[in-house]
Length: 387
Ligand code: PEP
Ligand code: MN
Image 1 (spheres, helix red, strand yellow):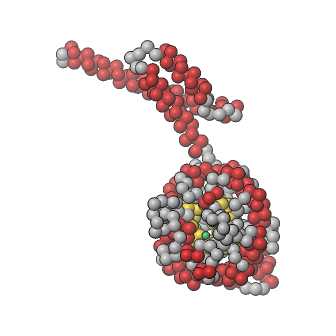
Image 2 (cartoon, rainbow, N blue to C red):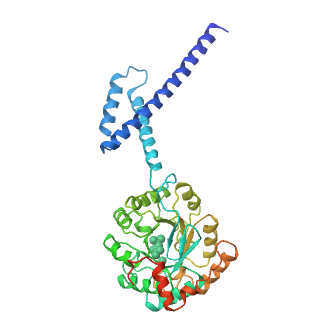
Image 3 (cartoon, rainbow, N blue to C red):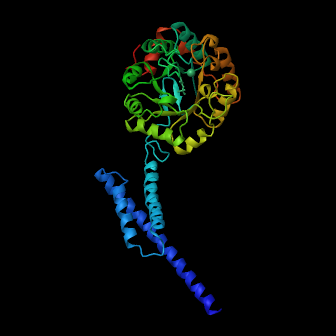
């Protein structure tokens, strides 16, 4: 080997050894950064300290003897600082209450007769509560099909302030009475922090609508209400953001949280939203919380609902939400996406025959209008619910 080649080999070995030294130093630095993080958390100090970062960069520039220029070094060191912070962030993500790594959320819980997480659940009912008669017809028809959770909006988040806004508190009463008449649990949306307590009196599950997924005050308030929460994915929310919203609820104490995808906004015009079916298995890798899919608001049309329901259940969803109205043609909201009770019954039959939903179990004794039924209902639903 020529002396020049020998020199080259020697220099290459030096470079390799410096690489390893940089690697050791970088990892050593990351370990120290973690220790700093622990102390900062104990002291209640913010993890990111821009002033301190500025001082460290200043020192690097002052001590720089070249050949790298200052701008280049500042860029490199900023990357190193960011990586340490990023590492800290990923650690906090693992420490989330709702993280897959945590066992402190509820993967299974009962709401009335529904065993969430244990069996595939179908939540059904009209888009909005409109009248006593409408809700009685809905509750009767749906309970006969074996549905255990009745939905209906009393407070409606409408795009136009001139559209039907819901019956408000009167709607809560109508919904609750109709549901209990047929031994069903109630889910309804709460839109305002000032109404959480009231809605929690009448509803077994509190729904946070897509438009309110980022309403952190509302999330905190429902987290304190003592009722399970049904959290919908925002119109253009990432799954990460959905999980952080769930974390707000969990942090206040409520560990019975159901995540619900209802489609996101894309360029597709043929459906109201685009159902992100992959969110179901992806969420299952991120959290132990039950995951549902609202097929009606995803589709915005009734003719493709059976396929979307099958897809959601096959993808591993713990349940689906479907809008059903005794007379969809005259519905005051979302008329074109609601199924009639007969159409809904056909869909459920189809899903049951394909093994995607459990067979109809007899709940006749619970729906029979006898004194026994009354006692049963009180046993099934916790007290504290007005009736
Ligand atoms: C609803 O379920 O009534 C509703 C308004 O849905 P979303 O919040 O998903 O639009
Ligand atoms: Mn609707």
